[in-house]
Length: 359
Image 1 (spheres, rainbow, N blue to C red):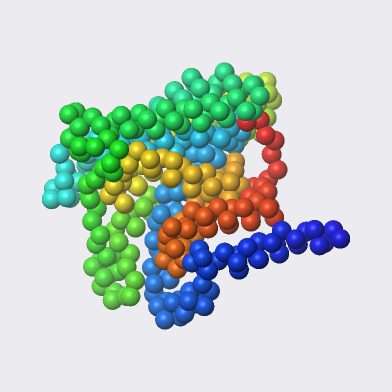
Image 2 (image 1 turned 90 degrees about the vertical axis):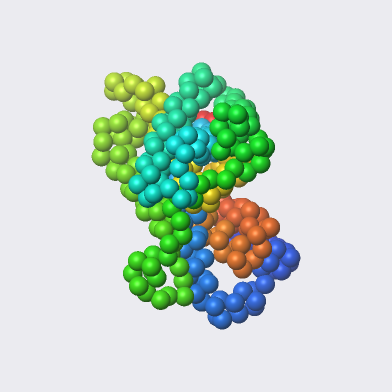
């Protein structure tokens, strides 16, 4: 009887997959045929998914950092990511750099935009923590959760207002709600063919290479910071037991503020990467991007840095394969279906551990 109960959710899941799968594009025979006839297309989607997943993973790190320290889901984090993209676009517009500018001018503009987005989002995140979350640390867990949702709406509307300031920032366009064109400062040079002289059936553009390399550097840097620096040890101590860390002389307010600063900085960097890679930003991107990033953090094991990285890459690959082989209209449904299945059989996520719930 106990074994039957254990496998009942699996049986229901398989039944629903077979019943609704064809409707949602999961035609197994067609998919296998496409992969067999065009294996290069599978490899190409692997590269695309890795690039998109890298951006998702950087945003997911912000969710998992904050949850790991104070066990709060900062739903405003996705919208801070959106503000980072808007700040990067504003700075690039102020420099006057376009696709026809020199490589030096493009690199300088991207560097300035990245620095501005990182600093701006870091400061915004610290302000959010100070005004919206700090006084609610010991409140019932529903209170900070509602506060986080409210802050998310506020930040999203700031983005909407910012997108309408065409008189100050002409690069924002004429409609505040419309997507904004992000200058293509990198281009799509094929690394295999144009740099290495290899005639391959797949392409690796400079955009994808940039996203993957920068994301890898940020992930490794964050891991080293948390593992080996003094502030990183303080963060781990605070995450383990705030009261004990305070008794040992750790200023937990500073540690938590630094965690929000770090998470916001990562969101700012991800905003610039998103704009350079997709060449378009919109004020609603914080909701959609933040939702996938939060899903990645939960999938990997929220509070676990390595899990957030792995979850982000996995979500990126799943979305790429769904867009290609299933149906782009059903991509989010497939992403959340995988999440539900993982949480049914492993509630702590793929790499998570059992932790308390304070918020």
